[in-house]
Image (cartoon, rainbow, N blue to C red; front, side, top):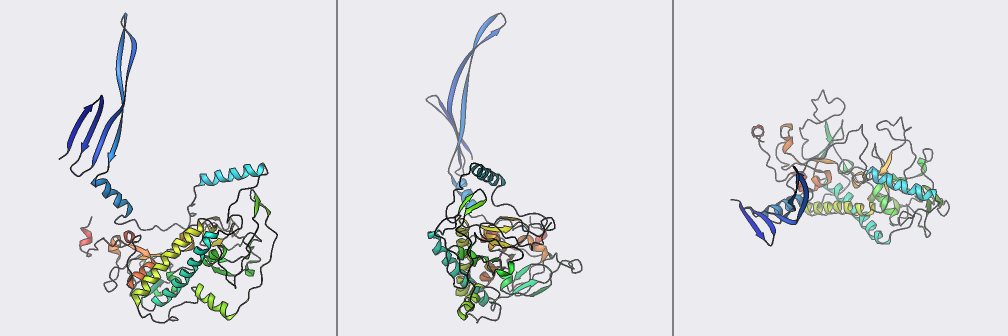
Length: 438
């Protein structure tokens, strides 16, 4: 039962409410003033006095507040990720007001012929403390690709032939959410085929440039540049040295006034790439196309391999997030094209929404981690040996990235950050009980 205590001491009023659950709210009168005013009433003036007080409410930590804070840190379940419409541009990671404010400041400095203050790596120099992070990301990337190619010999991945939907499990699910060609004739059922590493880890490639501040990649010269995974290009620009993909290391910073580069140290053509056996073997470790199902050996300890692969995936995400806080990565707001560098390229290959208005050019904006490493969410199968997932129970199912789902089904523990989305604490009812569930 609630208990209310009214305390009055030293001219200060303190109203304190204590609930039985331990939650406490106090109303404290912290400021009290008295005012006098002369008011004419009838034919004679009279003096009227009144008091004014200011009350503040303070909350003391109790059992309920601690429980709420704990729920905020680790909720039981979260909403599933929404599919972005193809006829809309991606949301900007930086608010438009901040971008306009920075643009006006650059224009103001350029109007006064003042150089734009640039810090590494915006001025072309390396960040020394991020070089070990880049090497760590590249090593974990190799472990991730090698582990996924071996886990595909144990688990099964399916891909729909008509839409980009992917499913991890012994059989394809029966959820009717296919929106591909001919989905009306199939009642929105998927047409499943066996998948590969590229279905689990979506390959995102970028143009490799010897000098990111040099010549921009044009549509006519696009075949003069190699296409490599965007993560590898990000690590190279962050300080990783690969013999087959050299990069220019500056000793003098780049100088800019506004958007114009006034000193870049001249244009330097990169050396011709040499293809040796060592380089080809290294490329096989960095690319997902050369690590397909059936080419890797059967793992001896599946659970250990799943834990190692999942740990490498989480480390790659954290490392890429640290690198992207400093190094610039651009993505198209309409398609999945990614470019690592201070500005995007001029290749006219965008075929997304309203590409005719842009003459096929990409609409560049700042990228986020999910643009470089797409999570590729799939339905979470709690019991791989049970019946397939059905549309009538889809509100009780959770989702997870395809890499996480494949590793969890192979024996790895569910990471804490993905447990709410996978809805591991939600009980899946029978089809007859689903009608009675709230």
